[in-house]
Image 1 (cartoon, helix red, strand yellow):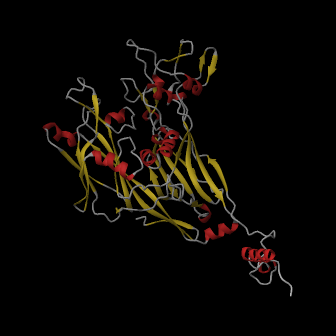
Image 2 (image 1 turned 90 degrees about the vertical axis):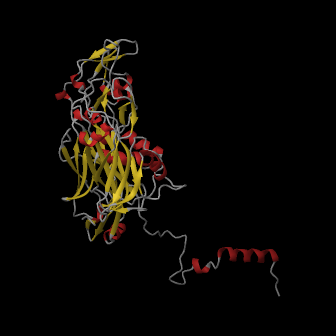
Image 3 (image 1 turned 120 degrees about the vertical axis):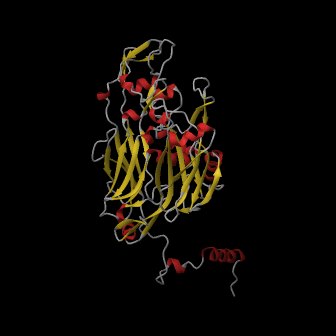
Length: 497
């Protein structure tokens, strides 16, 4: 009887336990047997993304509307953005014998008006957040049906309230954020290349799956945008700052590296060009197998949709404050769908006539004579609540709650622009990676809500220097969750009515 060496037997047993019965895999004795080292591979979905820019159907012009069609050159749309370059009133300038482009001269030197009798110099530039506030209205159409609509202010609110500090700051910077003060204003005379992303369905957070163009090949998607007038987009730190017109300033100046003054005239208004705006899209290609699966699948895309309400308050609304009384006003809200947030901002008429479209702070004097004491910052209201069906849905609370506490507790950060919000979602959680995937949390169904109304106690404001009367504007944005469904090659907005 032959004995097996103990070490060899242990090795064989160890190999059998570690690898299993090799013959079941190396020898194809059944249909389920495979050989793991052959050269046969199953097809896998490749990943290829392409970015293209699309020229609008008509030229974008200040104060007018243009349209651009989304060109479906791939399968899944994952990003849509406006690429913007604005014209300037600054000409090419010769400094120390060298001809500098307007961009080069403006980045190297502080361009102002010549010093006046008190040695004051003034700067002119585009308004802060010009990339957003350039747009009066942006609409997304499917064929002739309106899917989404935003204003520049609405997109600005989303940019400053969503995402982390870093991602929000980057979005604001490429949207035209500039530093305060004269140098920041002058630098924004040529804000550089701007980029404003549009939160279309399937593209509102980084983890969204995109919009499957491959499933709606027989439908056309286009974006219609209305621009503000150039005269409504320029600001200055000069005391006569109502509707600034730098193209009418006789002379501008800069000091070169040797301290010499270089004077020049701006371009006249009719020589200032129009903005260059292109639509940038990122689309992904998928395999034929994936294309077929996507086409044969009913796809529902939940997305957030803004509804804008614009209210005004006039002298009659503020008159009660002259008698040391309180002024209470109500404004009925328009909204649709389960709504998780209401955002709101105020602007004084003084901010509007000076083109300070980003100024949401109420400046009023400490005394009844504005010339006696400097202005200090206040809110436009003392208290506010939300009433639905005649009952308080949100209690009467001061701006510290709506403008500060709510933003810190329900968003990752405060927006720092004095924008208030009522929010019914759960807010942020520890360990969340921003920008994070979003889904409906706490909501109020504004489709069935009975007479949703804001009840506001107004605070006093400064009168307009033009009309000598008090006037302010309030913009309220309800953000509801809608659903876009794609089925059998057609897309539609569920619950559109």
